[in-house]
Amino acid sequence: MADGPVSRRSVKRGAMARREALWGYLFVTPPLLGFLIFGFIPILMSLALAFAKWDMFRPPRFAGVSNFARIGADEIVAKSFVNTLVFFIGVPIGMALSLLLALALNRKIRGINWYRAIYYLPAVSSMVAIALLWQWIFNPEKGLLNMELLKLGVKGPEWLQDPLWVKPALILMGVWGGLGPNLILFLAGLQGVPQSLYEAASIDGAKPWQQFLYVTWPMLTPTTFFISVMGAIGAFQYFGQIYIMTQGGPEHASTSYMFYLWQQAFTYYRMGYASALAWVLGIIIIGVTIVQFRVANRWVFYETV
Image 1: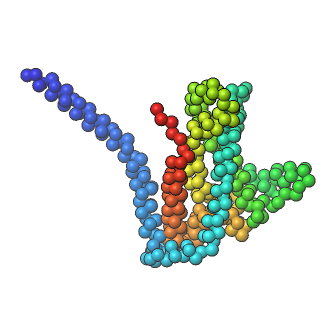
Image 2: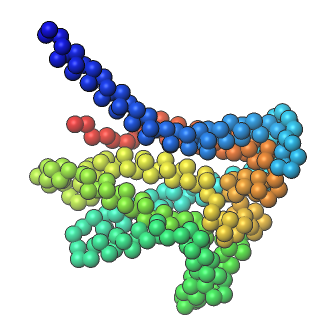
Image 3: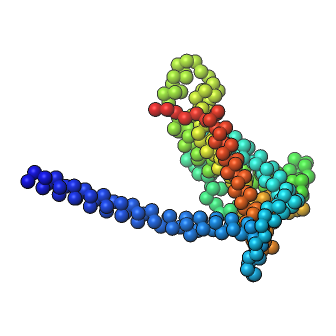
């Protein structure tokens, strides 16, 4: 007789657990299906295509490893890869400027929210609109930049039309565009630093720059690590601005690896070759990310509770 209520409670808990599991599966199923249909299956198909020749109009033909062998002999691939590495210069520059701005905006001054909103505006603006704006800024005759340089007695270059200056121009634009998101992350990191650490440092007689060096910077290393990883991945996938502003020119001086991959796939319909390029890019990104995680153990500080 004593087991009756206990048994009923067990049955009730079991029914509740089944309902919770059912709701859990219902919530998980849509994103899981989305990943399988739009992520995992295309990845497998691209792997198969990397070993084939396919122009989208005729059936694919098995080509062995010829697509991968072609990558090593393609001069434009080498040039686009070097260009992509040059675009990497913008990652540390952007991080340093974002950190300086975050330090400046992490103060209680009048109108601080307006300043933060102004610096974050590029992050919520259309990339096409930003690219068109910078096309005008870099215009050699009527652009804002060259007009200001002319006031200083300097004749500006032809920026996007000059093979020597097109990469610095794109790096400048990329740094400006990345300031907002990085600034927000650094601000969040700064506001997460416990005030007790600054108070303890002040009691020990630490000056402001010593407080930054021994308190602020160590506490910001997780944020810096996250931004560096995402920045590196983003630099490898640099595409949109090049597509809109330069189309990879002049003389392939601004052709990034990602843009060249896109050209092979959707301009020349070399889907097999483009898939091989994509897999090489994916392996490089994974390799660089693994190295970043390995090196992070030496300089990233995580607060222990």
